[in-house]
Length: 343
Image (cartoon, rainbow, N blue to C red; front, side):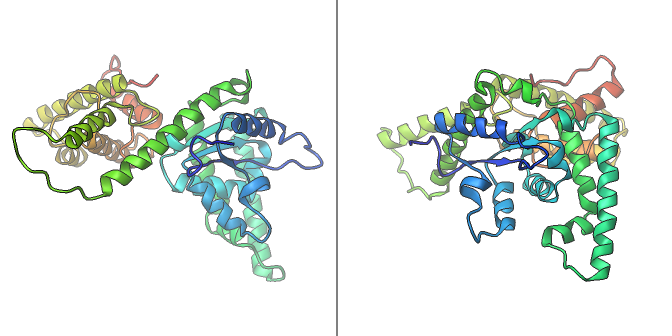
C-alpha cells in the first residue's frame, strides 16, 4: 500500500467496546477501513500503536504529539482515565484547532449542561475514591491515576474540552455519511500539507551558499525564489484561507488604529499598551499569514486573555476560539461590530 505521508500518521483516540457496549468500535473500524483505502496512514492502539510489552504511557504521549488526531468522544471516553489522559496530552501539545478532528457521539453531548454537570460530579467522586485508595496504600495507583488525583481528575480538561467543542460541528452524523467522505477529504488535505510543511522546514533550516552579485540571475536561485513565492502564497493553516487572512489583517490593523487613537487621548490601560508594544507596525493586507501576522494574532490573544474574554492558547494561530473572543470583545464596544472572518 502506498501512503500519502507515512512519516506523519493520523492517530485515533477512542474508547474500546465492552460487554455492555459491543458495538462501540464499529464506526471507528469503518473509518479506519476508509483511511486505509484512501492511502491515509494511521495508528491505532489495537493494530500498530501499542504492541506487546509497549508502555501504554508512551503510546498516549505519541498520540498527544500527533500531527493529526481523530478524537471519537463517547460517554465511555469521558469516563475513562486513559482516554482523558490522552486528551490532556493532546491539548498540552497545542495547536488543537489545527491537529484535532473531533467526533462526538450522541451519548456524550457535553454541550448539554445537565450532562456536563453529571461528568464533573463523576470526576470528583472518582478523585475521592483514588485519594482514599492512595491513603490506604494497599494497592498502588498507576501513573495515570496519580496524575488524576494531582490534577483534579481532569475536571479542568473537561472544561477545556467543553470550550473547544462549544461551537463546533462535530457530530458523528455529519461525518459518517457517504463513507466518511467529509473527514477523509479533510484528512487527505491535512497530511499532504503537513508533509509539504515538514519538507519546507527541513530545507529552510539547511544553510545556503552565499550568492554572488551580477547582471544575470542563476537559474537555481531563480527557481528557488519562484518556489518561495508559491509557498508564501499557499494556505498557511488548514483553517484559514488567503482571503480570510486578508480580512483578518484588515481587522487587526483597524483595531491597532483604534488603540493608537486612544493612546493619544491617554485612555489606554496596561493591556492595550502591551498590545501596541507587541503589534508595533501595521500589517500588509496581502492575505499571507506571515510572521508579522502571527505576532499580531499573538498580541491579540494576550490582550483578550488579559481582558478575561476567554482562556486562549497563546500560539499566534487564528482559530474559531480566538475569533469568538475577538468578536465578543468588539461587540461590547459596538453592537454592530463584526470581527468574524472564518466560515
